[in-house]
Length: 388
Image (tube, rainbow, N blue to C red; front, side, top):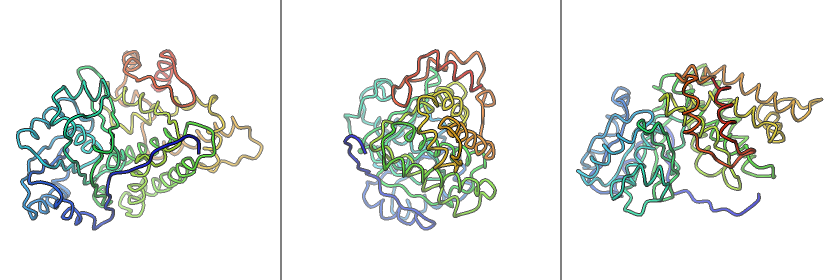
């Protein structure tokens, strides 16, 4: 392990089929009024809404509803949620849904008492909150983003065609998160596999940097193998509790800052995918899938040693008689076969992107210096064209 680092995680997790009961304990720590945040209404069909509101009412809480959070939460929705919170002087933001609801709740939490435009302050200037932050709790219904145990929040501005993430500090992380794998089982299969790829790519973004002997890489490889193994089971049988529970737990550990310790990280796939998502409004995990292989094949010569290790340790590629380059290519081929088996989007065109959008997507792609190669804008365009 090279360098120096800090590790702390402020979120309490409750995991398992009986985990929702612990909401009773957590509610005792907060005030009267709870802003209940959820998406398009699926929780009202699968019984989660009734279960959560019953607990809120049993604890004497005043419920303020904030539904309609979209898969890619917008700045307009953020402003709507802030107005609701201010009007009702809410004490707790309870997100019941997937990562988008959790992301949105965190953005609302830092904006309620902010006297500036939250989009400009947090997502353009990347400043930290200097105002009171309203606490967030999560009841997770989809595995993927890891938002239940980190400070990340991604917001889309359709007018400016930008989709930007800000990773806030400990004060903004959910105070508690409830993870019941049963709550994820009513998801459409396409959403399940998109979430699975989001998990896998979160690990890749941290893994593909550095060449030192790093415990974080060993942990990352174990997580990737678990995601691959359990994804194949869940793809055949989405109701397999063991597979879905393992996927849910892996999602949390993929992005709760543990495996990033001692790592520079890359995050280029996310920058490309989020920029494409701002133009297409496509599902996040699918945009990541569409750009991943063109990007990894482009940077492979600059990080060939790690890609060769990825092949042998994650995909069990036999090294006998192969050069590092051949091993690396074989690993990406194995990854591609797995992605196709899951039914992931393998190109941006299938998600609604066109040749005419490429220049705009390139302009909206944040230029990061981490990873194995800093890209020029022309190289970003080249990778995006290869992703079509």
